[in-house]
Image (cartoon, rainbow, N blue to C red; front, side, top):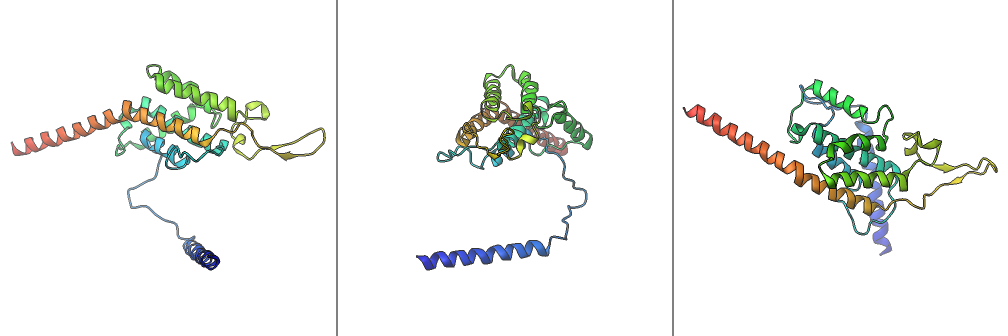
Amino acid sequence: MESLKTFAKEAREKDFFRWKETILKHASEPKSLQSGLIIDIAVCPIFWFRQTQEVLGGSLGKANDFEGLPYSLFLLASEWFLKGLWILRKHSKWISLDTSVSPEERLDLVQELRGLTEGKNHDLEKMIHKIKPLFIDDEITAEFLDVLDGIIHQHYWPYYRGGEDWVACRYPTWIYDEATNRPKSFKSESMLRKVDVCELFKRIHEHLRCRYIESVVLLSRAQVINEKAKSLKDHKA
């Protein structure tokens, strides 16, 4: 058994160094896109929701995943999801994954998303308060936003600088005792369990898919089919 462990470790070491050498060999060779292609902001809300799932661990809601969820991951996942909600209601025509949007529209979207926080980057509370009125007719999504707001206050509210510096709150936290000059590590006793956050996002994603996304995608496909049928009919005529 010990020899098998040693063999596996040596094999992993060789594999790692082989990978590292490959990376270093091509490190100075920048990749280029095919002519006419450009990488820019995603406009489809479905993609924003999928990115949230990836941040939270790929397959949502693992039953044995009860460790605490760090604020940095919660912030990133929540911010992407909230911005996806904004796009979903403000730009429903972009729901399809193959939607093509002009550079001017993409630039306008970037400005819209920045405006959600009124100059305070990554402030989830400001995003929630801006987005919630868009879902006044959707009790399930409105409740999700209330729960998200409650999570921020109960588990992730910034512990320093009066709660103003949200960007810095993504960094590792340390406690400083100014009276004794003895710093010590900080560990939140109320850190939210990852499994609960995953289940929350899993359920709201399913609700959004059923209520908004599937109907629009089906309608879009029907329109494409009708257009092709009309084109074929005109061609035969």
